[in-house]
Length: 338
Image (tube, rainbow, N blue to C red; front, side, top):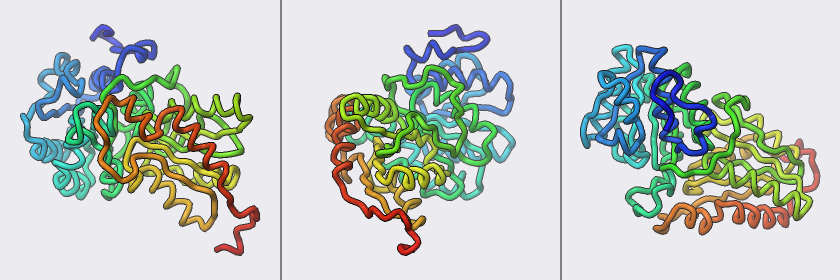
């Protein structure tokens, strides 16, 4: 682990640190410069990896105990008092157990509370359905005033944290449990809230992804180019809300085939957000959503679940090849369709 003095981490540490561990260290860096920052937890400081912040700033950490609804109510009060609360808990608790408090206490008042939700998706796969959270993106993006970010890896987590300090209103950052593969080699690739990152350019098909699936989509694009001669565009849609409509519509116009991939139920998440944009545009394309098919996940190690639900490299390759066989209207003049 990096030293807890000065800068607490570098991009080289990302190979051995989880998203949540990087979160804890970056939060320390931010707190050094911003005295408003406080951290709140519901008896999960170590599990959600903010223990390093607790060690460094014990007077700026509040542990409310196993009381997640109180956790968000207290965070709302602290925000009203001029502090900048970072709330750390598992995504299942932030999105379901304390949903009323997140909605009414925080979002309704448009308060500056940053929610760092760990163990998202099926990242805690072997713990079973109660510890999975494949509904959180759908829930959080439905809340007015909420910004929803799903970083690809630890480096992007750091960028999201830095950006959210200056971003007004509530922000929900969804992380995994850890052990997710590292995609980015550095943090200067142009991260901005609400703007997709083009991982690979292409003209045959576009894969729009977020979170852990970004790494796998990038790998799939390389293999499909080598084996099939395909030009696959990969968009890291790290911000689900506000979503980058311009990037989606460029992809529709330029590739005419869209595949979304997410570690989430196919209802209400990234795929639905992308479909909303396409439907409102009046433009047609071949479109497929890949994720959990409206079910509760099987229990198993995350890597096995990614394979089972076609979220890994092999699964994305398979889905791209299937979608390329789909027909769509060859006429690119959409004026007669609107």
